[in-house]
Amino acid sequence: MLQLPATLTHPQATECLNALVQALSSQPSEAVLDASALSQFDSSALAVVMELRRVCKRTGKALVVQGLPPSLVELATLYGVESLVGQHL
Image (cartoon, rainbow, N blue to C red; front, side, top):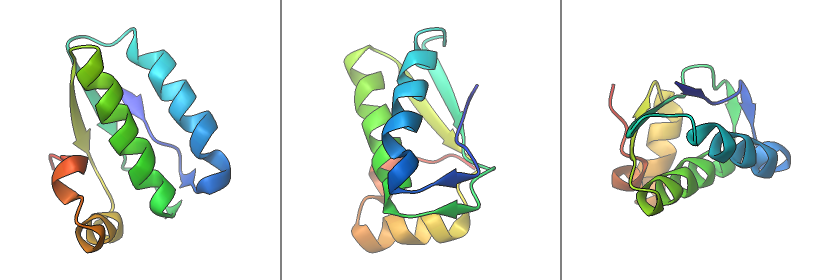
């Protein structure tokens, strides 16, 4: 299972994405991303999740996102990308 950190804002986004992409190689055909630890974030968290989804698609893996904080789901809805985040609670 992949995990998002407690803090994911613009300064952490690139490093976080790189770590997730590297960890993705050891995941089965369906990778699970746990976002339940997120407590401090901005729209960069959405960007990381969406880019990880793109990487999964390119490599033939499915991505299941679990535990998105309600305020991040609201942000995704505000930006019109809730379907791209593809969370499963």
